[in-house]
Image (tube, rainbow, N blue to C red; front, side):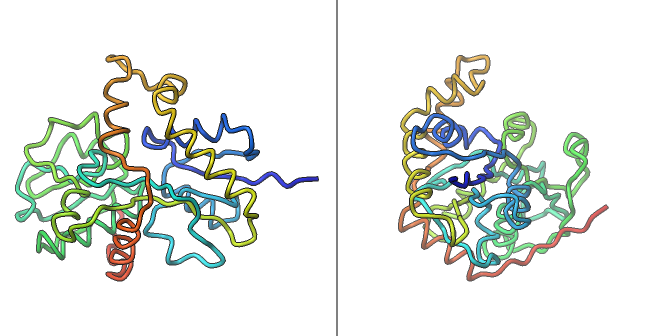
Length: 256
């Protein structure tokens, strides 16, 4: 009797081509568990999944794990959904409230604070999003995922972390990568690769089927997935990951 692998992936707009591909691929049999990025990592670490789309920041900490597939959630320019927003220039910020849904974005924010913005803010854990609607002087907010769309235009300053990273490093970035335990068969990882290819090639169908048409008939979603997100894990993104990992993980937010 064949063992059906468990796959955990991010439940955001930027993954719907992957989800569509996995649901429609003829040669991939798997149980799919959707969750925010940090929960995907938890699912994998706790053994609830054999394969995962994980925040890239957690990968160096994992044992018995390989990066698989030629796909990722990445950006070569503006990513749009990983931003720091504030009403003051970033160089004057005293506190950065950190969206806890992605460890990668938190650590990337820390990297940029040190290497680009040259600030030492107080890092705070953001679990009450009402704070975003009532910012105090000196506040900035790291926001990720689909919720960012709802805050666009509400702050004077918006720092797209993919652009900020590229200005420092001249490299693209990979926010999340596919990993699997070393005992997962090559047959399964190959099937996943084909499923992801199918999904990326059918992005418009994914938007329609998975309910992201919105008020403009899916135009905004399609532009985001084809202009802001780059799904290919190429050599440049591997270089970016090595640079990111070599810098170390430094940011630990205070909880309130």
